Image (cartoon, rainbow, N blue to C red; front, side, top):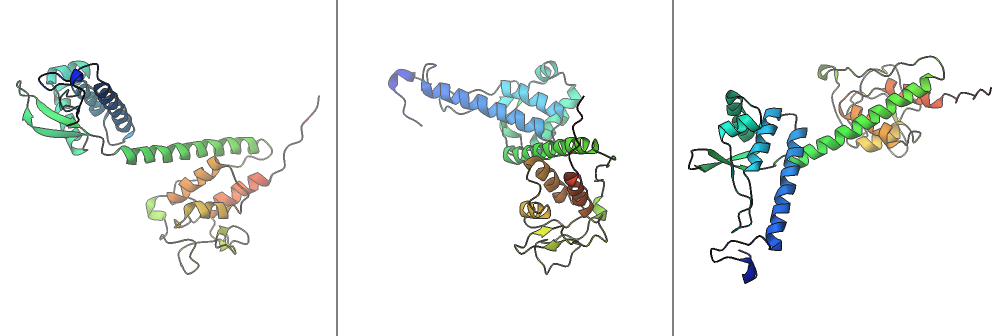
Length: 268
């Protein structure tokens, strides 16, 4: 145990309110709770009822003044029903899901009233954070691409956005796209740097999805031959590529839109 100045410790070994260490521990616990709720809110496996019950459970988790560690929490059924607006039967399901997903770690001891006790945990924080980041990048790219289509379609005939409804059963075999020895489905060619581009590509099957490459970023940049540099649009096409939905026709259509001349401004 950390040695604290005598003026901050009682005869029973508890750290007093005025100590910086106790205040720091409480701030860290508050930060942990905030990150936990953020993770659970973005986790597609977490039901909203579990999130609501976890917030109630967190109300009973405090800092132990002896160890400066978070205490266990417990869930009085009537309290959860009132604070989280949950039915008794729902609370039983919530307990199972909380344990199954690893957010609630059951303890052997119960409270004097017989309530089960749990430690709160955040085992999926990094994975969910990366999932959210990827989704945000994809949505920004999708929105940027939609706005680009709207802007370019105002120049001339309407060009429909590329379809992206290919199912898993329609996807070709996967392999390293930047390996010339790979014999999967690929309709482009390789530049001198080993990057793919659409110049002189075989477009006999333009609607066949590309195999997922070993280096998606380099592949996407090479696919547009450096003509598309906007990160949002590149992120959109990268996400489609990783889902097995990017086709040569998508790229050709986008390049065709980019090559359309700007409309002449009409003066009054």
